[in-house]
Length: 161
Image (cartoon, rainbow, N blue to C red; front, side, top):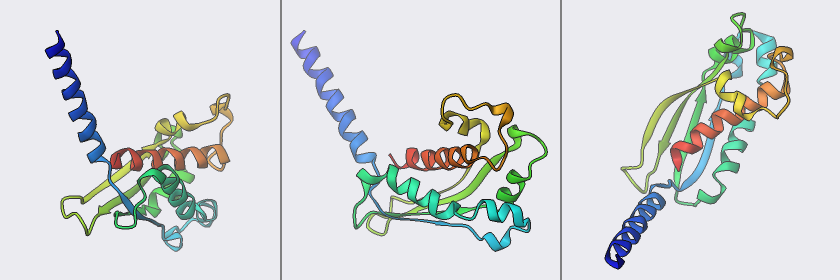
């Protein structure tokens, strides 16, 4: 029985060690949005701070992974999706935030990734404060904005841990 316990303990230690190695050290985060590309002035005005807010949220969630020589994370938000989401007439189920995410690490050539991330309103609901009445929610609600930012940042960070 002692041998089995030692084997299990060694296996657990190896798995824990591998998980720790999988965490990507982050050197910088940059979020870009070309607000001039949004043809709808009302939508462009609503999303004005999204680049800074999303960047700050990602950095806050990655604080324990920040290292000077870490990977660069770049997010390019799809301006068309911002306008369409703000003016959606299809209902909340058609509301989403899309962006291309790129991770590059000059110190580790194997640590590169590129993907398109699409976060829906349905996914963002998990980040709404308790008690929000979704029937009274509008696309210009601060709850909607903050929850979409939180859901997007959370998805980016999960891939880096």
